[in-house]
Structure formats: structure tokens, C-alpha cells
Length: 288
Image (cartoon, rainbow, N blue to C red):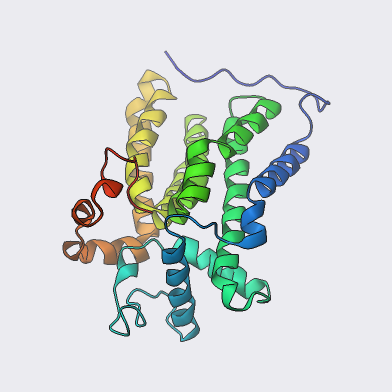
């Protein structure tokens, strides 16, 4: 017995379904509209804005000096340095740095906040397109587009993560979340490229926000088992676990040094230093 969704009906291109490029264009416009303040003014003023701007400044500074993956930040703590990027996710900072290299700097001292704002707009566009691709595997195109718009406007994703907390790592990880589910669907359909595709998608989640990746892993495993016939469930679970291992290797430049230095990090101290702000009872995700 299988629990897979029925195959979507084949429709001719029409006003109702529309060609895929129209849906893609609509999603890009919606994502840009929702993140227009980020494009116009940069990283929103939220809980972690100042921290991320400082990290981006140090990150850009050391790359300019030839350190292509800054881990020990020399300028932190009044020149004494700090190893924040042994634990801090790197992808959001690399994207913002890359945007700063592509687009000439007309922002002066506001370069870090403006490039981070543009990077978040790009992440929102990816979130919409990945959700559309995922939902189009089991629904018609119009429904998939509407589902993608709903995902973009989810309160936690848009209001809390972006505009309240300025949680750039978690925002990027949630943008790659639908891509992981898309490859689960391709795996259920028997695609040979699904396992490496899932590995790449999950690796992107890891280097965006490790805590989200830890929470996502069992959900992906359960979803993969549910989406196939009973006779294929063990195989499907093994494929997902293999993708997780491959993803950890792909993200090894981040995960291996972090694991090697794990004894120096004590996330439980957040409860002591920040009190209720970091309590699991006050918010679901205590790390930005």
C-alpha cells in the first residue's frame, strides 16, 4: 500500500494553469515585494542586526586580506580575536560578500547592511521557487504557485525570522527547506539523481544554520518513509541516511572543524547569560 499523492492531472497551458515561466515570474515579484524594505534599506533592524553587521564587516575584512574562510576573527574583542566562525554558519556571509563584489559599492559605510538585505531578498526568491518546484511534483502548477506564496508569507518565516529577529541563518535554512523536500519527492519517484540532490540541498541547510539542519533531519527521514510503498520504506530510509552522510561531507569545511572544537562550545550557557530570552519555553529557536 502506498501513501503517495495522486499524480497531478495533465493540463494544457491555459489561463487557469498558465505556463511555468508566468508562475516563476509571479513568485519572483511577490518575493521582491515582501522583501522590498531589505532591498531598499538593507538588513532590517531586529534582535541580531548589529551582531550580523559586525560579523559581516570582520568577514569581509579578512577575506580581503587573503583569508578565504575566516574562522578566527582577528579584530574581535579589541584586537584579541575570537573563534566565532568555528561555530557560526558561513553561507549567509559568503552570499552577502559575493553580492558586494558583483555590485559596485555605492553605500559607503553601509555596505554590510545593504548587501545582507539584498542577500535576504535573494533567499526569499529561492524559497518561493523551491516551494513551487516541490509542490508541483504532486499538485497542479497554479496550486503549487499559491502554496509557494503562502510559504513566503508564513508569519514565522517572514515576520519573526526576517523582520523581528533578523535571523539570517535560519531564514536561509528555511529557504532551502523546500528543496530538500523536492528531492525526497524525486527519490520516491525513483530518480537516480535524487540522493545526490538531497545531499546538496541538506548541505546548504547545514552551512546556513546547523540547528535547523538537526531539527530537519528526522522530519525528512519520516517524510521519505511515508511517501513510498511499504516494501520500499527500508530502502528509502537508507537512501536518506546516505544523503545525510554525503551532505555532512560536502559541508565538511564547516562541520569538521566545528566538531573538532566542540568541547569549547557550551550552548547551554545561553540559559544562564540570557535567561528567558534563550529558554526553550520562550521561543522555538534560540540561535540566530
